[in-house]
Structure formats: structure tokens, C-alpha cells
Length: 187
Image 1 (cartoon, rainbow, N blue to C red):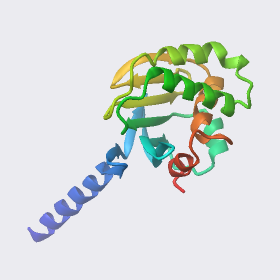
Image 2 (image 1 turned 30 degrees about the horizontal axis):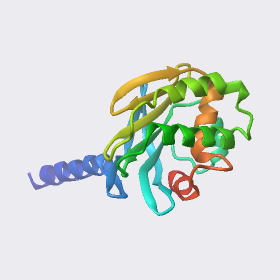
Image 3 (image 1 turned 180 degrees about the vertical axis):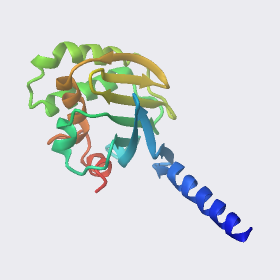
Image 4 (image 1 turned 45 degrees about the horizontal axis):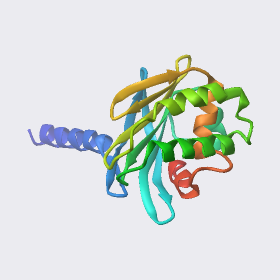
């Protein structure tokens, strides 16, 4: 009887530890996300800051942990980025300006091959991001990048080229936020 209780207690503790979330900036990021039929693990997380303001907690989710940003950007495998907004009131205009700067930096200024896809991506961001809002950018090979805002699918954009440009916003040579990049890579 004692052995059964011990085994059940250990099983519950193991399951609970698998379901734990990463607390950062006053919000919780889950340890896993779904991407199509794949289950992704939280690779790392950090805060996106603008000057001294915490804008959002960001998490990078991969099939298996990886600290090499070039390999993550190049990989044609399921992955996701979650943004959990901490700051209340990021206008769509500011979001789009930040995306455009990220695309410029992530592509080395060569946005022409993905310009139409960038425009489609930007069209998904029509509303102000408010405190507590969750944005998921999920890549599934063969399907493309899907953008979910507050659990609503805004659209899907096909192409590995575009996936690389999107993930380079956070993980490229000139990331949106160096501290966030380090956190997402688990450093």
C-alpha cells in the first residue's frame, strides 16, 4: 500500500513538473506549445524592453532545445514564438514599425524576396496590443507561418524563406532585443 502511494505521488510530481510554466516579467509562459501535430518545448524566454519599459515576455519553442540561432533560423521544423504582452497599449502602427525594422535587420536589408509576405504579415496586426494579450507565431513545415492573436488565427503565410525572415527578427545578427535573444536561446 505504501509503495503504491509512493509511486502515485512520484507520478503526480513528475506530471506537475512537466506542466510548470516559466514565470518572467510577472507573466507565465507554458513549458510547451502545439505546432500542428508536434509538441514544442520552451527553449528559453526573455523580456522585450524598449528603453526601460517591459513590453512583452517572449518565449521560443522548439522540438528540441537548441542554443545555435543560425541553426534555429535555418531549420525546416516546427517552432513557435509566444509574446505575452506586459505593457498596456502598443499601437498597431508601432508593432508594424518594429516588424519592418526586424525584417530589414534580419534579411540584411534584402526584403524584396519576401516583401509581399511581409505586407500580408503586417496586415494581421490591426489592433492595439494590450496587457495580457498573447500573440503566437507558429511555423509548421509545408504549411507556413500562422499568426494567432488572442487565440484567433489571423492567417497563414507559406514559405521557408519567410519563416527564416520572421525568426531572424528575434534570433538574427541584429535582433530586436539582445537580452530577449539570449533568453530565448536559453543563455
